[in-house]
Image 1 (cartoon, one colour):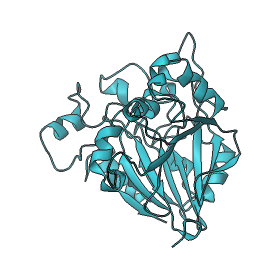
Image 2 (cartoon, helix red, strand yellow):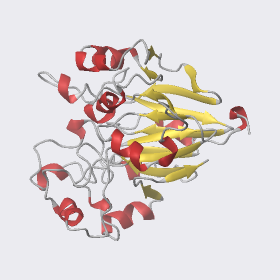
Image 3 (cartoon, rainbow, N blue to C red):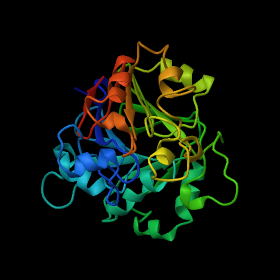
Image 4 (tube, rainbow, N blue to C red):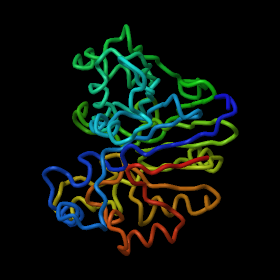
Length: 306
């Protein structure tokens, strides 16, 4: 089967938000169950997925800080033959947050691959010289314009488009706008063999343009960070709402379930799920609610064929 005629396949490398599940310093309700080994809560690494059309060459969507462990867990990403090799041919970054980009530092052993991102994201990474450990002579950084179609793998067409978001946490200063639409926060539309996947791990609210794009997808991976907007505050875990962090809530007025209620024809999967989110507890009322609305909850190692 040639790449051009290959079927698009996605592997979930990690399904959690920053900190993973359980988070190293957290004993909230969800993490407490995970620490105790309760089978209702699966351990999860930080969010990212891998795409392929031929099973041999892979594109990563984001590179979380858990990337090395994720590669160890996914045999399809192991080196082959003798000497140095990796099936990972390219990486697309949706923003410059630690959750999305810190894993690049795990790939500093001079393995040829390409990094694709908007100019704004590449500029943010370039401002932190630690990322220079990933040698640009071997791992080129390729700026992509919004709406531009490119092929990071043969037979896999990718497009980046803007969704509302904010600057990375480590670049926040003063008053922070969480609804900016531009190169800072983007989503990925990937297409191969007539199948289309949209990956949106961060989104402050759903615009009409995004809703229209999502309606054209076969599979949508979407931001499932918090179940309710005030979840972190109510649980004593922080003082920010989800919207202040650039994430719309799953439930409630203006939430994800409401925003995509008319997209029943699309396979919809929640990803980038915070450790406080009760949908991570299998059998919980919150998980039942999202399933009743036609959504799935991503888990590490989940395979999605299109």
